[in-house]
Amino acid sequence: MKQVVNMYKKNDGQKRLGVIRLELDYELATLYEAMMENNEEQKQKCKRKLEKLREEMISLQ
Image 1 (tube, rainbow, N blue to C red):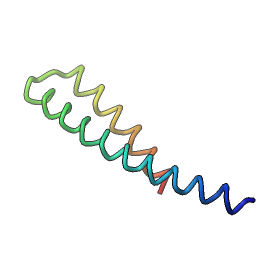
Image 2 (image 1 turned 120 degrees about the vertical axis):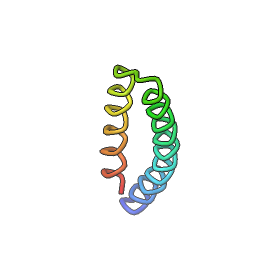
Image 3 (image 1 turned 180 degrees about the horizontal axis):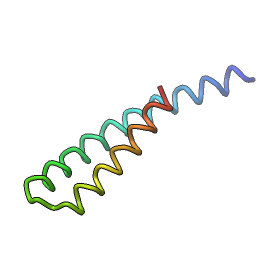
Image 4 (image 1 turned 90 degrees about the horizontal axis):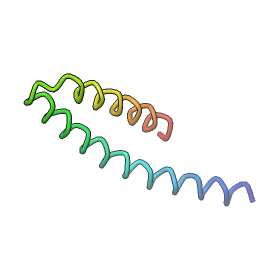
């Protein structure tokens, strides 16, 4: 039974990694736009989101 649960968690984690990669791409594009517009508030928001995504990605690997 534990093997089945572990296999499910592994597959779920792999799917989540794909979603995280897409979210990273989106946040990097948003950060770029904020940099071009000199929008400090948006830049800080994107950086915080990117840090959270990075931490989640590391925990899943």
